[in-house]
Length: 68
Image 1 (cartoon, rainbow, N blue to C red):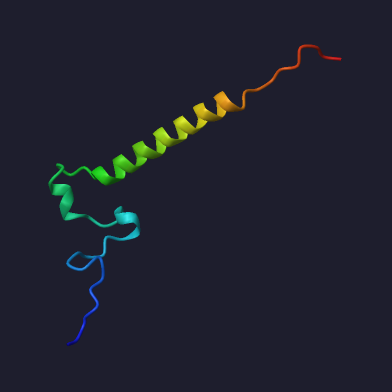
Image 2: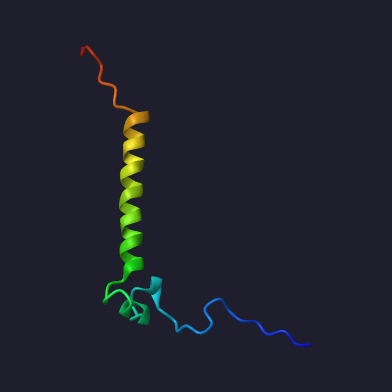
């Protein structure tokens, strides 16, 4: 019995760096919009925003009351 190695991307062509540089047939399903790219960017923006809000809440800037 022989076992053959099947890579995870079998049946799909190489999509290039992050899947952004080469056209993807799945964009036909979304009307030409790269939904994975936009979803990833939205998650990045939300993550940075939530991270900033947490940082601002947990480590607020303390202004000294008097200056010498």
